Length: 102
Image (cartoon, rainbow, N blue to C red; front, side):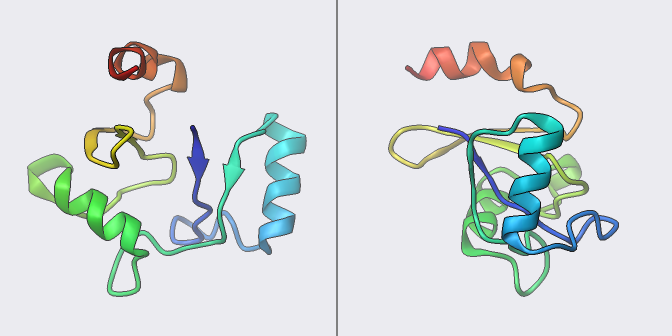
């Protein structure tokens, strides 16, 4: 399952409401996966999911910060974080890792 977490912490790219963001993503990018409410992914108000993921899978040089939108995390069916991917990693590039978990 793919889940998107809209976040306005990266250059104010997602300033709209959840409905506006969902409409924009569907119309412009064909997004048909689940989008959550808008969340923070960095800082003291980071959503618990991202506090968990970034603690388990820190980024470059051990940083817990998410540097840019579209950072991706692969989580197994039991909820264990498996791998963190750069924002530039295409969804297609995750296919082999996903298939290995199935």
